[in-house]
Amino acid sequence: MKRHETNVNMISSRDAIADTIRKNGFRATPQRVVIYEALWKAGSHPSVLEIHEYATKTDPSISLATVYKTLQLFSDIGLVREMGLRDGSARYDPDTEFHINLVCNKCGKVEDFNSVSMDQIVSNLDEKSGFQVLSYSFEVRGLCSDCQRRV
Amino acid sequence: MKRHETNVNMISSRDAIADTIRKNGFRATPQRVVIYEALWKAGSHPSVLEIHEYATKTDPSISLATVYKTLQLFSDIGLVREMGLRDGSARYDPDTEFHINLVCNKCGKVEDFNSVSMDQIVSNLDEKSGFQVLSYSFEVRGLCSDCQRRV
DNA sequence: CTGCTTGCAAAACTTTTGCAGACGG
DNA sequence: CCGTCTGCAAAAGTTTTGCAAGCAG
Image 1 (spheres, each protein chain N blue to C red):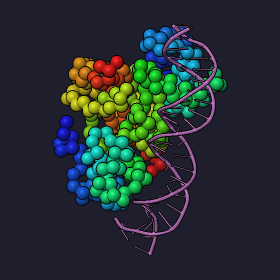
Image 2 (image 1 turned 45 degrees about the vertical axis):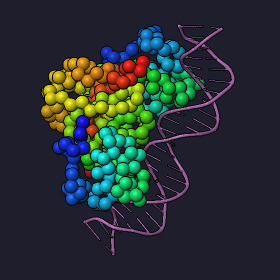
Image 3 (image 1 turned 90 degrees about the horizontal axis):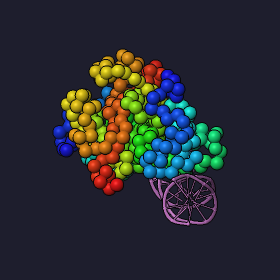
Image 4 (image 1 turned 90 degrees about the vertical axis):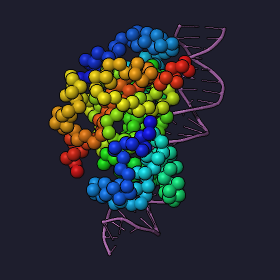
C-alpha cells in the first residue's frame, strides 16, 4: 500500500506543517517539521527509534529526547496517533483518518485494513483479511471532559 | 459502571478460569488464576503494577515477573486485551467484549463507552460522551496470517 | 528581547531474561 | 517424572528530566 504518496491526511509542504503547529499555539521549529516528515518516511507505524533514525537523515543533530517531546506534542494536538504496543515501545501512526489497525499478538506487526462500510467491517473480518481475530475495540483519542475544562 | 459485577465476559469461578487456561494448552497454576482475578479487581484498565498489587493481596509471594509473563500469555490466548498507553506503561482490559475505549491524550484516563448501534457510535460521539475527539481507530487483535502458519 | 525549545547526560521506569528449584498433569 | 512455570536478581530497553544555551516570534 502506498500510504506515503496517496494519503489525503498527510500534510505535504513544510510551510503547511509549520502553519499547523503554529495554529495550535506552538513554535514551528525546523526539528518539528523534520520529525513530522520523518513520521511518514519511516515506514508504517514506526517506533520512536525508527522516527529518530529518519529524522537524523535530514538533520543529524536532532536528539532522541526532542523526538520524544515532539511526538508527545503531536499526539496532544491530534497530528499523530500513539498506538498500543507489543514490544514494550510505543508506535506512532501519522494517519489520523479512520482506518482499522490489525495488530498481531505474536509478532507485533501492524497491518492496515480499509473497508467502505461499517457492516462489512464487523461481520466477516476474518475472511477478508486472513487475520485470526481474538479481540477488538474501537479506540477514540482526544480530551476527556475534565481535561477540556483544565485548558 | 459496575463492570465487575455484571460483565458477561468475566469468568467468575476459579475452576472455570483454570479450565480456560488448560483448554488453551497451558498449565493452570494458582498464580495464573489469582492474576486473572486481580485483573478484574484492580479497577478499570489497570497497569501491570496495579495488577501485581492486587494479586499479592491474595498471594504475597507472586513476583512481578510472573505477572508480566502471565499477562503476555493471557493476551496471546485472547483472555485480556493489551492496550495503548500514555504514560509509558501497558494497560490491560479484561473485558474482551466489543466496547469503545475513550482514551484521554492529556491525563491518560480511559473511559468505557457503550452504545447499541454502530451508526450511533460514528455520528455523534462528542455529544453523547462529552469527550473531545481528536482521532479514532478500530483496533483488532489476533494473529496475522504469517503467525497462524508458524504454530 | 522573552521564554519556549533544544541537546546532552543522567535518572527513573518498564519489561525481559537466565537460572535453579517447585510443581502440575 | 518430565517439562513447564515460578521467583529472584540482574540486564536491557524505553521514557523522562534538569539545565544551560539557542532561536522563533
